[in-house]
Length: 475
Image (cartoon, rainbow, N blue to C red; front, side, top):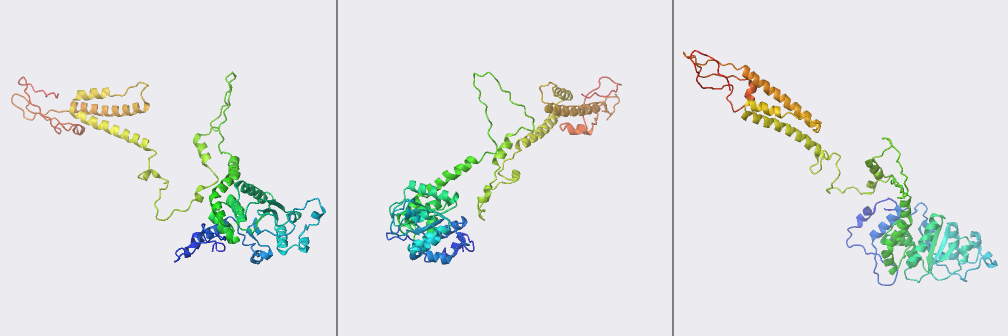
């Protein structure tokens, strides 16, 4: 399902997730007590990770070849990845290396036909012919000498010894050296690597697994499961715990070797400003060149350019889980109940101006009700805005226009009311005295004053002399 149909791991594991009883875990190929186990999930994720990293070449995979060469009498080797071969140690006497400038070295087989026609054992012949035809450039031996390495070098294959005791874990300096050589052989020389120990399982799995963690970011469980999927029995006993404990160090080495170089080569979008330092003893001054408005760059523009990257971080994020509340950014946050209003200061200022104007009108109307005519006119004349230059232009224009307009309207109403007031004789007497008079005011006066009687003003008094009829003066 994972390799052929490209199912993700969680779908491939779904049919067996609720198996009852659950499936038994896997253990190593050793004889000691099993203290490190793997389960089906580790195998599925290991194979899926290898497929994602293009480490499973299904198009070039040959089942017939795999079953033939995995046999002990046919060479006992397997391709773990397209660049690594794990195999058991060949055995052939003598084991001492042959000097290169001798006749014995010249007599060694140097081509595939010569290897096939030699008297070497069949497993050794298969190893030599297969490695020579598959572009293997390096053979790493981890166990003691059981064959002569000159057979490989005569075919143009480099051979190196990194021997450590069987069943143990390699020291980290040796692993670091192996990773460096393997990475250079794969990336620079475009050659493959063959690694072997006595059986090609434990020590071989340690070094190959360390490189795959270093290069492709496997976890320890994933890489052990995948290597056992390709060559059963790899990584035995304490070597499982060793890979688990040092997997973080292998990934740190990859960061140190590659990611720091990439970060150093990545130039910033906006270069830093260069500061020209001068000694205090030098009296010369430097005048900066004048720049026009088009050449200046704003700080916000530089920040935006720095944030612009060719990588989209949202592409690596999973989709939001349905049914889970998420706080997301709104395009128009003004209607959001918890969002801050960016233009809040302007809105407050606008509302304050309106409230201030309405408050003035309300205060003016209330004051006019309780003040006399002369006091109203004096107050309106006194409230004219100052013409001093220190005043704000906006405040002066608003105060002046509002005050003058209201002043003229009230002044005209007062004059019209006084001039057009007609005193009619309500009840004339024989003495010509006026006992009561009606005063009709304009409708505007009625709206301005609520404390007075609507259009009627009663005046009581006496007239001094008989026979004189003069209108009563309104005070």
